[in-house]
Length: 256
Ligand code: ADP
Image 1 (cartoon, rainbow, N blue to C red):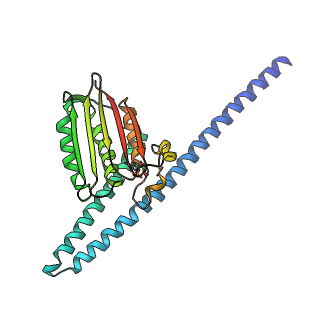
Image 2: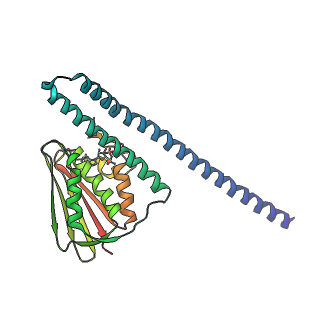
Image 3: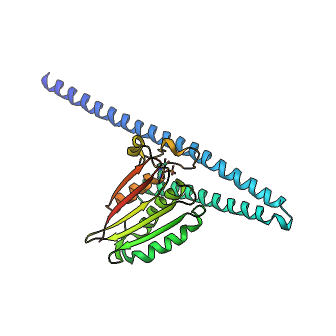
């Protein structure tokens, strides 16, 4: 009887374990479904407004046929350009997240001069910035670094785009890099709307948007991706912000 009781107890334990496994799998499935629904909702919402803007600007351009209407035409061409840039950013975020989830993104450091790299990046981002918004770049120390260029570029594009998006036209943005003995430090500083103190702990969470983001377009994915990229690079990221004063994001990345 004792032997039988032991066998029964063992069988019950196994059943309990299988039950827990099934529960875990169901919970994961539920979370995945929730996430898919959220993605579809966010994607359709985020795409509808820019697509409507492009459509309306394109039809207005078609109507402005007189030579003296060139200024109006140019305004709408500019609006289409910046809207397409915005859509491309959203698409890139979605693609990066998918690749990250599938473990397709790896850290492959290479040696390169960080000053040239940053200057090129600042040049590329001129078209993203608002009127009279400038990115001012400075560097300290030796320029040769050993970091994954692709990951770094994505991180800095995300941070600088945020700095521009959450600042008014005419406000300056600062990008600083400095090479220490074993690490490379980057800082992106803006003079924008800032992040309310109670929201600061959540800005790296997927889909989180601070309460003061208002009508400024965004998915709440950028900083989540940035944080994952920094983890892949075995670096550290820190954010400090003051409401209506500005935000500074600092990165410390190992220099291999
Ligand atoms: P989003 O696509 O919404 O910009 P992010 O993940 O990049 O998503 O940022 C998350 C939230 O953090 C933003 O919605 C915004 O509220 C806040 N945020 C990020 N960067 C800044 C910044 N430089 N200034 C002010 N708020 C910011």
